[in-house]
Amino acid sequence: MKIARVDDNQKQIVKFLREKNVTVSITSATGRGFPDLVCGYKGKNILLEIKDGSKPLSAQVLTPEQRLWHYEWKGQIAVVNSPEMAWEEIQKQTRD
Image 1 (cartoon, rainbow, N blue to C red):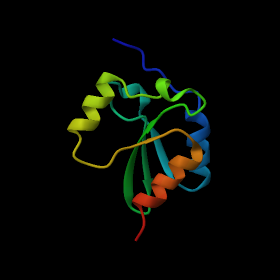
Image 2 (image 1 turned 135 degrees about the vertical axis):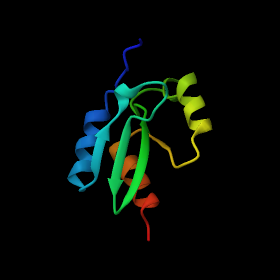
Image 3 (image 1 turned 90 degrees about the horizontal axis):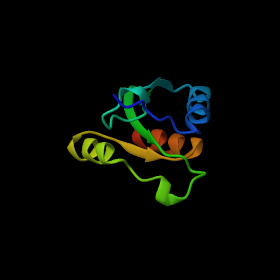
Image 4 (image 1 turned 180 degrees about the vertical axis):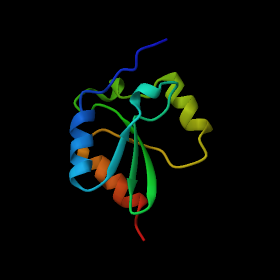
């Protein structure tokens, strides 16, 4: 079994979102392409895949397992690379 790799900015993103009163479950260890975070805000669930924004874009690509999971998933999923981008996505998904 492969050990899940956690992006260096995950802690920072989780802390930032929790300070915004978002509930965050860290799911990066789930593996098989499942997103890194499951977030709850304003009665909605938001799935976030984290990529490290400090790395070149070529290092921020989805793995083959992630690409397959995203392709097969029939619901919302977003790829983010910073706390601000994660917050922006959560606000977008929870607009009334």
